[in-house]
Image (cartoon, rainbow, N blue to C red; front, top):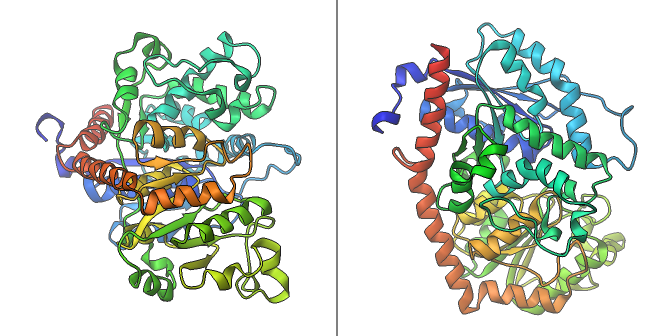
Length: 482
């Protein structure tokens, strides 16, 4: 890598702390970063996990070969029950948890045998950045979403001062210097209600990111060239965010990392028997719940499409289902699915209880499309598997992700109206499924996704753009150490 290469013996001396907020969706990309630093750069990482309960599965995220260099430390659980009420939004709760955890982070770092060489915090951990300042070590923010979302976040304090009233009521698009315009309806959840505390927390985060020494983003140059160029060259953007932005992705779970979780072999056997690119994989992630009405319409749309599907399904009301859901015993099927749906689709469809090995499923040759909530982890896993998507955003920054997947990258289709605004009918579901599996447009999306996969793979190789970004960060850390 020439001027950006690091001597292995020196890089192995580095020890970084990476702070993760609660929840699997936040912990997974943090651990993937730690795994990558260990495997590719010999860097030792200690992941500090803020939590509200035990998370025994966390160490399964670390490959056996990396466990000497990657350690997950679960901080004592935080308790915010006296600070919240039933109406407290998710982002507010996360920010409260991370705020309460600051003394725990400080104590954990102080108890280490050797002072760490750098601190990296995830999106919700910016209030722990002063700990690095006290230790006089470099401090970074890890944005596990898109560069476009990062741009909106860091520019939100400016929008807050320039625009009156609710963003969703604005007649035109929101302008971010040097970046693609943002439709008001696509803003991140905290921006939907400027009167709510989670909005104030979001604006605060946007300001605090600028206090770091740099921001790592799980994207790559050829995925978001315009936005990344704006961070480097647009004067208005640079005045808001002075620290450099480092695209280091796409960092995703390798297939072998999920194998220990044990997807039922009969499901994989079923996939093995299906024709290539014929199955639609349907999954809304750990936090994605549909209403009973929407679950019904989705089921009827899948049936109407007459295409094969593998559906990871959870109860619309309780966040989980039991075995009765599949057998119809006790009326469970009637509660959540159209009567007779399981019997009518038994030859073309398969339902999976609560969870499936997503990376392994997406990598299977029989999978031809992915109906997803557009969480960025899932989006990157789909792109790097060469699988086009039906974008079905539900919360967080997923609407922004969906807009980029459809309009900029051309690897997805989406409903005419946001699923958060109205129920998507069975006819529209069937049309999108057919488009993804059997229409000629699907091949163009698949080709584009495969093209991005090749570019992404090259970016992570030695000398690639993302590899160079990581080397720059490590060289900066090493320089500060000396």
